Image 1 (tube, helix red, strand yellow):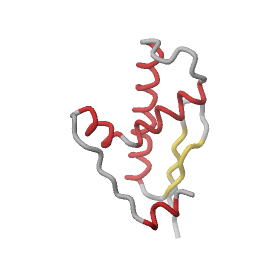
Image 2 (cartoon, one colour; image 1 turned 180 degrees about the vertical axis):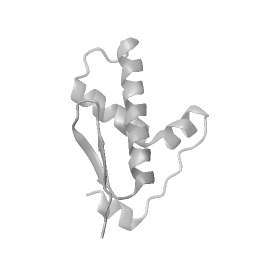
Image 3 (tube, helix red, strand yellow; image 1 turned 135 degrees about the vertical axis):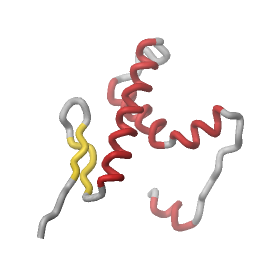
Image 4 (cartoon, helix red, strand yellow; image 1 turned 30 degrees about the horizontal axis):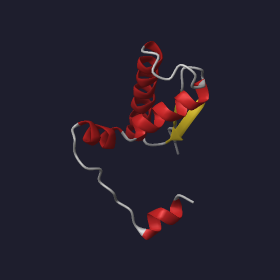
Length: 92
């Protein structure tokens, strides 16, 4: 039996995601690329000049991962919440 595994690494060669689903790997790769673009924008414009690289990475990955919500906010729309008791307990 042949198994194919996709590994997504960041620009530093650090493994960030591993899956057998090509679509999921491509989506994660796009998310990382978008996070890098956001970090470049924030650094270039000196928006958060004292923010550490680790914190910048965490912030931009969060923003990229939640791109649809960020887009809704920028369009002046309300945030969609999908809070359920099960979802709340999973985040603990």
